[in-house]
Length: 329
Image (tube, rainbow, N blue to C red; front, side):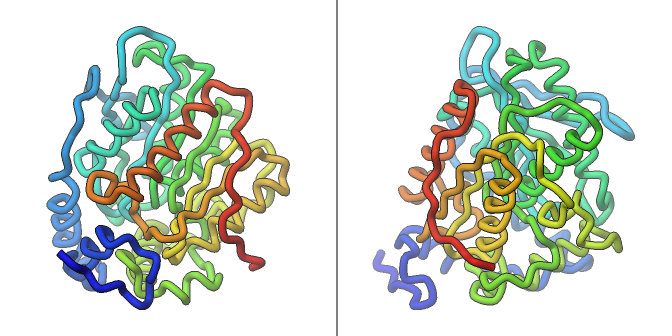
């Protein structure tokens, strides 16, 4: 099927453009529409092909107010494998283990790592700091109990996409400040980093693709629930210092409202002496990792990420990254 290029996003791959055109508009995300929005996310993301993985185990670990469900994906036999503790995206208000099951399977297989996906509590029923504290509990538990999941306690990374990328960044700040374990790396895919950002990409891509700025800001407010959005554990770009954080991989699509925040965070980490790999995928949009099965460019981007994660967990530091498009803001 021929899909005419969108003049607003001329580099968007035709397959991805077709998906964007076929995706129903979500409307404004509010407390009243959230149930419908959640159902739409589940319906749209759980039909992906799910590749076989050596073993998948559901279990629960101790959390701040009760058990936190996790799902462990092990790519092969043996013990002492590197581990990625993964937080799913969804604006802190939607998605779960099932919506990101296919992606976690792919990451485990392509990166050769044990993936521990965390089913953290969601806002607005459980606003900040509940999702972060759940992820913190899971990530620290994995370090302390890595051998229970076939992992190496000295090679544990944290990562996530979108809101999950935010939680990965925030949990690194939290563990540093609490004197917790030091993770081998942090992987942030199109992360939320500044809830009050006024950087240029927030204006340029106010209408998407996929995620509008109005909906992004609505979900930030649901998550914060009245807490100042400049709180560093909500908006890591507002941290007083980023010194002492683990090496970072940050990937940002060129067509995304948060692109310039990702650039700013990469620069701030680098200025604080943190090794950083930053890559801007110019023709892609928010959520691109989830389209690996339909869009070859998204699959190639996932391969890139998994290659960097694999290298980072078998090498002393991240390889030199591709600078991509930068902003002076």
